[in-house]
Amino acid sequence: MKIDDVVTKADTAPEFPGGIENFKRQFVEKMDIINVKSKSIDTRVYFIVEKNGYVRFVTATGSDKKHSDAAETAVRRLFVKWKPATVNGEPVRYLYTFPLTLKKS
Image (tube, rainbow, N blue to C red; front, side, top):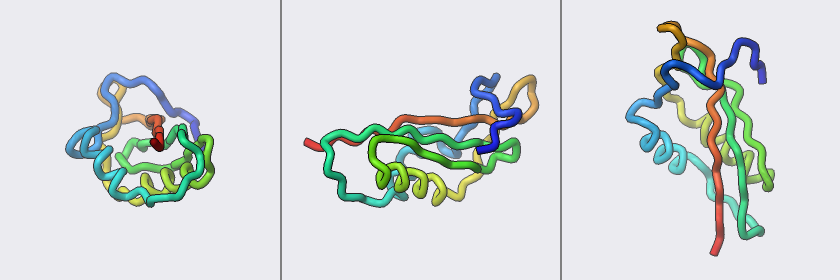
């Protein structure tokens, strides 16, 4: 992941069209269902929202490799342009991260 000039704090954060709830809904729709053996899986997904609003450098880390791979693929399947983050009114590269937890009962 190329993180030159990437920020984690901005005056305005990047925005997914329709808001974060729409992102979550579309993410879940795009994520493949995988068979997991453990009762709880914690994954963290990272990607960069570029100055032009496109997502690049998607990576996920976590306790289950298949789950991490499925999360990466789901983000890549969302071919949607974000509204980029800004600092002092100028678009910036923004490192977006979110936790993803799966618990089986």
